[in-house]
Image (cartoon, rainbow, N blue to C red; front, side, top):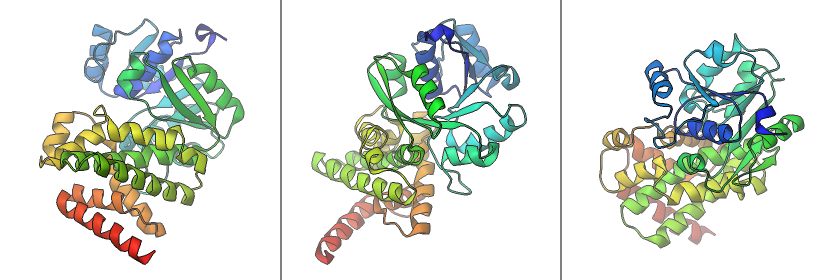
Length: 338
């Protein structure tokens, strides 16, 4: 099946990630309706035929149709990919609920947890749109700019529905954008959430110039925290050490394209958080994820000291140096107890 023969798809959220995925699919000949709630942004995309705010330098093929009209965006659509910031994910679904049919399928490309319930994105879909709604999750080591540029990328797509999973693999998979299908929706999402928090911590470590040895140890211990949370929420071990877990963790912790890492770098260098966020200019998901992951860990009695220390720093309750001293003391004590 060629890209041209596939039905159009709607992408909700015209940030860098939603735009990059739109570009990827459009290059395959697929029609993509790219929706944003921001009318001025849509007007600019229509006039300039690119997303100069979030992903400049990548002209839109004719197949990308920017729109601010949600009803028109989803008209006649079978599949909707949601790539809005996680804080607006549930609200977007509530808006969709009254205007989509029961057969429309949802792909979650947002990374986060619900701030009220701690639910994963696909769990929110089932809660808001009904437990029989077909849904999937797309995640993995994939910077938007590199996807837009057509550089080699590998991601995981998860769904419990085999037919949907097959359709999405058909839609997204190319030699330069390899899709690895799985049924482990929880594991794929947990990797995408936790790695953002660990990336902030790694950025802080590097901002303080603690060295490559410390960075390597931090990422390793961060993976262990991710695996503990994954085991609790039903994620599979192979997912945690695969693309959506370890792969995304390595990417986000070690490259400055990561907004989460850049926020951490600024904190480690003594910059104010608000100033760093303003300079980054986009949502830093790990900042909110840090609180929610820490609350989830405390609720279930899971030890996630790096995530908890990161949240303490972001609240201003710990300095970066105090957090480092605390983590080192904890590690030393755990070895003695063992």
